[in-house]
Structures are given as C-alpha cells and as structure tokens.
Image (cartoon, rainbow, N blue to C red):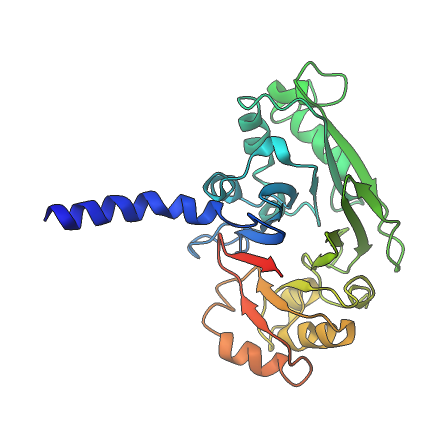
Length: 303
C-alpha cells in the first residue's frame, strides 16, 4: 500500500518536470494547444511555444486553455521575445488577458512586441485588438491598461501590425538571435498570417488557419525543418468549413511543394479526431515524409 502511494506521488510530481524538459538544449516547439474552438474535445485551443536552449522565446497564438499549459511547460513569461498572432479568432487569442495579468506577478521589465495582422471590416488589427482589450475607458480589461504604451506597468505591449494584401513573404524581422517572417494566407474573410521562425539554423513554419486559396504558404515554408499545419477538417468538408480550412490533400500538396522535412498536424477538431488513418491516406499521395499528430504539451525537438 505504502509502495503504491509513493509511486503515485512520484508519478504526479514527475509530470510537470517532464513537460519542463522540452527544449533544454537546441531548438524545440511545444504545443500548448492542439485543439480548436470546441467544447468537449479535452484540448486547449491553438498555441505554440518556441524553446531555444531551455528558454521559452516565442509564443505563437494564445488560444483558450493555453495559459495553464504554459505554466505546466515550465516556461517563464519573462523570457519571451515576442508574441506572434496568426489571426484573432477566439480560439487563437482568448487567453491573452490571462497571460498579461499573470505577468504582473513576475515583474517582467522588458517591453513585449506583439506581431499580428492588420484589420478589416471583419476583425480588428493587432493594435486595435490590444486597445479593445486593455485601453481605457471602455476596454474589456481596462484595469490592465498600464501594460499599453504610456502606461505605468513594469513593461508595455508593443503592437506591430503587418499588412495582409501582399501574396509574397513580408520583410524578415530580427528578435535577438531569432528571425521571424510572415505571409498572408486565406482564412475566409478574416485577415490571417502564417509565420516562419528561424533559430540556430532551424526553421519552423506555423500555417495558422487557412484554406490554401492564396497559394502562399509553400513560399514561406520552403525546405522548413518543421511545418505545423492545421488539420481542422476532413477531406469531404464543404461550405464554410472548407472556405476557412484546408483538407488533408491540400496539406499534403503544400508540404510536398515546399519540400518540408517534417509535418506536424495540429488544430485537431472533433471532426478530425479519430480519422488519423484516413488523413494520412489523403496526405501520402503527395507527401511521403514524417507526419505526426499533435497533442497538448507535446514536445518536438529539431535536431
């Protein structure tokens, strides 16, 4: 009995330590949220963490539930060089106020760049999104307005808004030893970006939500070490779902055209969970490289 109890205590204490080992050396991506906007799938919504030599350097999207997994990962918010947004649907952005409020207790002192798309009639741009959340007097969380420029917080959020009209990669930005680059992608009427991140000679591309109609992602993902593609719909999807997302065959075509080295499928919704065999069958006629299916807190090193 005592032996069983001791094993149970050790097992549950070991779980966060195992999660915190992601990226201890070199470059790794950790999935903080592998799901979509649904309730009942048991997954956090879209969010990713880039680790470099044991420090969490980039947060890509902040879907609901991701802040808890950020904590489980062992990451330190003070180490982040930036937050990148693909777009501002709720399943990619809802947890931002939780991160910002939580950071108050960590006493981060360096300003935090927030990169994301410009807006349109359907969705605010990056600057307006932050203002709508935090700026006084009518913001939803105006009590956190000190974290905006000219505020009295220990640091400020610095909005960097990228255009979405072009169909070519946007200029590369440098964040210390990191290089980031975006390209507009088609996500129905919403302004949306895919992101490429380079660190220590390794390259990771985050597709975000997109349906492939712009044919831009292969340009950004050319010979990437890892492409994280969103597997939100099955092959037979139609209507609004198909206007917003790419089916497995399109994922396979993009991965093959870009000649990526590995493919990780995320944003797994209930309509694609359990269909992994069929998904692979639709990808394989085009892409024959390694394919994995993402889960929350999964760690993917780039050797």
